[in-house]
Length: 118
Image (cartoon, rainbow, N blue to C red; front, side):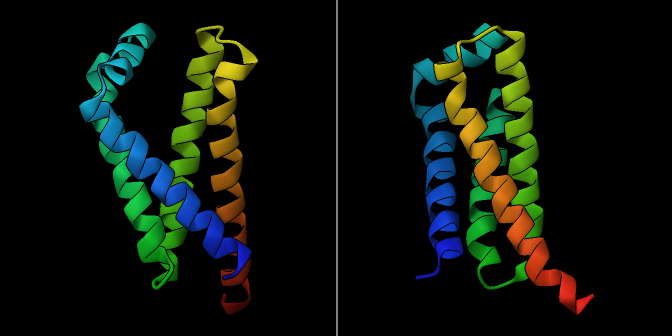
């Protein structure tokens, strides 16, 4: 298995887990309430699940990988921004930052592979 495939599977399974957790865990809903974003919780969870599925589909259809990795990167950039706005500690913010970097790296690799074809 190539490194990129492992990273895609890891990110995808993580986002599926986070997305489902929103609908099953009161703690996840409480976090969105704490952020003042309770209206966007379900929407964010759906975007996470769609992005995760898109990463898996992107293993076969490269353009879907680019869109999904880009979308999850943007979602995590917003997540890091919210964590900074809330003045959360570095350790609490670290998962969002790591998933931002992970999906940005997947996006970079996906675009790099696509570039010679342009």
